[in-house]
Each structure stands twice: as structure tokens, then as C-alpha cells.
Image 1 (spheres, rainbow, N blue to C red):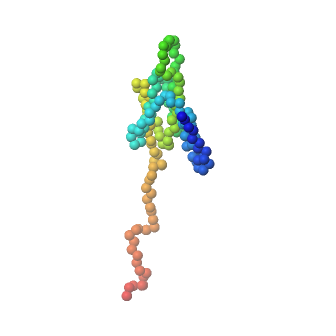
Image 2: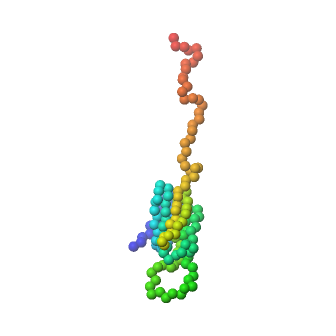
Image 3: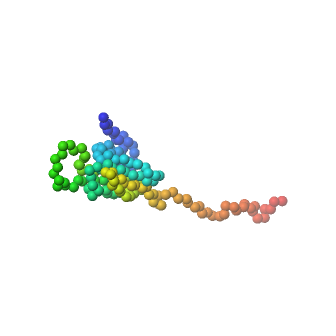
Length: 155
């Protein structure tokens, strides 16, 4: 049983979260489950998406990284071989799988082995976005001593 969640009350009371709500709603709508995939965390700032693409060749798969979205598309080449199948259990339909990426996630290398497509991802935070220490410059040395006004010597 699939239930839809209505984000309308949150949209009315928040500002600037439209993209987040759109992603949540779109993810619930378009996830058809093909091809199946895993998302693994390999390290502190590295991740891996693995898709099960049995029946596809590497030249039939296209990976496109654009802004904060990764799209993996599979399109079977036309087979000249007209086989008669008694049972066809390996999916041969075309697919398009989209992944929303967080800010500063870069798509690295992709490998195809044993029917699995692995795509490496890495979080690379630019220097401008990293915290930095601000040095304080001031009007005098911190070790200055306070002195009594001249002519007002202690008696």
C-alpha cells in the first residue's frame, strides 16, 4: 500500500525549501524500481552507486552528470538476431534512472563489470565554502600597561 504525503502545509510556512519538497514528491512518484541499485558510503567523503544492468553492454549505457543531478540511461541496440524465446526473464527494456546529488558532490569514474555498473562519487568542498580562521588586527598590543596620568604621582 503506497500512501502519498501532502507537503502543502509545509510549503505555506517555509521559504526557500521548494526544491526539497519537489525532490521528495518526485522521488515518490517516479521510482519504478528498475534497474535496482545500491548506494554505498566508501569513506568520509566518497560514495558509490551500483546499478544492476544485466543484459546491457557498456556501449548501450550513457551517464550524464549535470549540476546536481546524475542520469543513467540504458538503451538496447537493435538486435539483428531474431531468436525465439521460450522464457524471457532478463529485462531488455530501456531505462532512465536519475539521482539528485547534494551540493559539492562530483561524479568520478564509472566501471562496468559482471553486469554491475559502479559510479564513484566524491564530496569536494571548495576552499571558499570551508570554514576559515579570521585573524584579528587591532589598535595596540595586548600587553600594554595602564599608567597613572603624568604629574599625579602616588604620594
